[in-house]
Image (cartoon, rainbow, N blue to C red; front, side):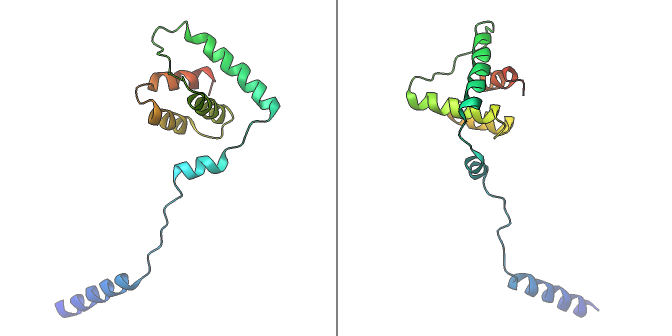
Length: 120
């Protein structure tokens, strides 16, 4: 009886060792973000800028808010693109925070502030 179980187990291992493996993993989150990014139309850009102006006006009323240093054109462009994609729902709140924290790991509160300000 043990001999038959041994042969059955050995056959099972043989079949699993010979089967091809497939990479069933989903594409990376970064690939999904890049694929879904759409540049703003002039109409959407105007609405976005109005909303971000509202968000920015609330910063001075929050003593806990620590400004994110956007001192170069590249950083400003990155932040504008990131917040636009969030506002336009091209990325999720979690993706927004994750991308933001990659560049500014100590500014979780500020990224959450933007989310709340955009009413998302």
